[in-house]
Image (cartoon, rainbow, N blue to C red; front, side):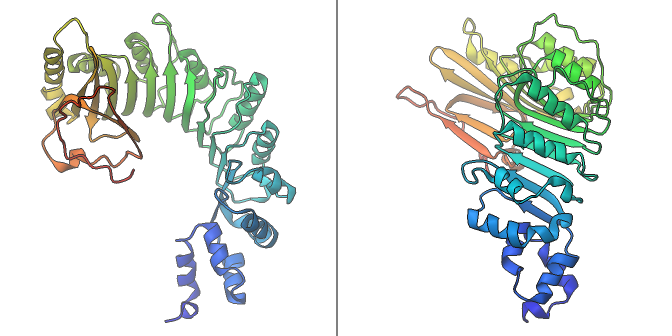
Length: 401
């Protein structure tokens, strides 16, 4: 059977398996029938301009894009090493985002020009269907007034529901001076930007519909008290580097959590202490994923500390009531010993593997607990010593590295 003998409905169905650029490169100008389907009937283009050649980009901008701007629902623009100066070239073709009238999702990668970034965000205000915005690896000049203007402009987008920000930024003013309220943002992810509790409190005041939050909180004073409570938040993904009292302050701000994914540094909590904290502050919690990095006391027997810690997670609260199973790895760094305790199955995207002195777990010995499907990044740490510790061999699999 020839491809052209298929009905239009089947061809349009097959088109959905291609990304927009592949689709246009494969079928554009083959014949008038395919062009008619591409330009008049196919309505869900997803255009990703990462890793595209200059020739292909120019060709698409000249011959294809003008005919499908109102059919693109997702657009990705990048200014990284593979596509240098692409946003400026894109704008030079007189493409403004307000022409993409059905756009639902916009991703901006590595855009270093604040002027370009501001221009693109400003044009987003004319998009009636834009619900998802991602800004990754871009502008970081620490111009505080500009950052505040940009964030307020984003918070003014009328239909925005999901905002993902992943910048390596040293400034702490991203969210401390928001002055525009967003009633539409429900999901917010902030990566690699450290926030204080006061920043988070201020953020809550201007994002009252927030339900899902991913954030990093670092180095706050133990006696810092934040009075605000936001009852709408149901899901929290938290990278935390501070003290236990501050962590409890965080939990008090979000009492209705039913899902918590937590990475901590330099916090040591036994299963008994975690039980008290969770029962007191997060009584609605159903899903709990934990990765706790800590140091064992070098003044006491490490083996005894290790066994006592594991035993504190072997009780009905952890095993029967919630089925929150844990594994703990004991790692030697000379005379110091560190531990990594995490829930199983492992739910984080990065896994650092050490030569462990000892590993123990509370889960049944079933293969499902050793399938680390969420891990995309794997790092193996080689000790500086000549001798390698005897590691417990577990049948762990990483299918999505």
